[in-house]
Image (cartoon, rainbow, N blue to C red; front, side, top):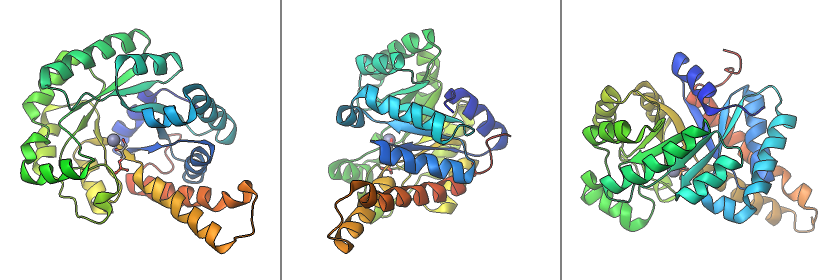
Length: 291
Ligand code: 13P
Ligand code: ZN
């Protein structure tokens, strides 16, 4: 069943666990995520990025998620969210399409401009009861940015006093932060160093739910520590892509005669279900559909 993000977060805050935010692109990924939610009896967020909207079309992907959530997991609360929204137009389209939460990511803009653009989206979204996630600090994704993170970390790390000013001036409902976290697959082979003291300082002054992007590849102990220091939403995309593509490659290589996509795609869907189940258990959201 589809619910508003605020209902999921209320329970997560009360019971000290985090919600997984899992990126989808199509029916197969959505089914893998939802089957994991069912198996673990876990609430979760399905996230859609602008690239996935360009790939599948906004209405088709929304209809897939809504219909599958209603019919495949009618008793499991699921929320869907725009991930890394790029501008006002995109955000407003998603609000019209029924999202209960949208991210507006202007983290690469100068501080004042980030505030200005984010506030504009918050004012509009709140008129429709839609929640907004802003970002302050940066989460790198390209090789160049990752190099820069190591050379000049302060360009990426969220400054607690800026986070407070950003929250007060924009009125965002959730906040994505930079604490040494990294997007993409590069970090699956290169260690990530989370700045725990920075997260502690941010958590002391920011009371709205904090969002950890770039969480693929983080160890269980790191995830647990992040949750204990105020992280309430944890974003996973890269590990879903890896699970899907590795299983697909294996199936095609092992069974060169099979031409039925429904048979070829069974194992990739199962691989997504398995990785999402593992994350749900790490995040502590198993068996939380009623409490
Ligand atoms: P990963 O690339 O680590 O999976 O991060 C996902 C993410 O932050 C989506 O917004
Ligand atoms: Zn992200």
